[in-house]
Image (cartoon, rainbow, N blue to C red; front, side, top):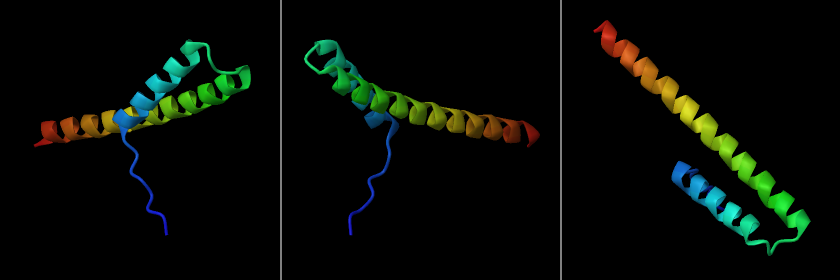
Length: 68
């Protein structure tokens, strides 16, 4: 049974940067550009969700800190 790897923000950002480098190289076929772009957008959406969730948690912690 394959072990599911843990998602990491930094790794996702690094992958997006790699994809952008691949696209900017001009060496990909157009279909590959669109495929890579789709992966990059999905990764960025995951990053945005992660950051939003973390921001909410920090806000909640700060709010609770003020209540003590």
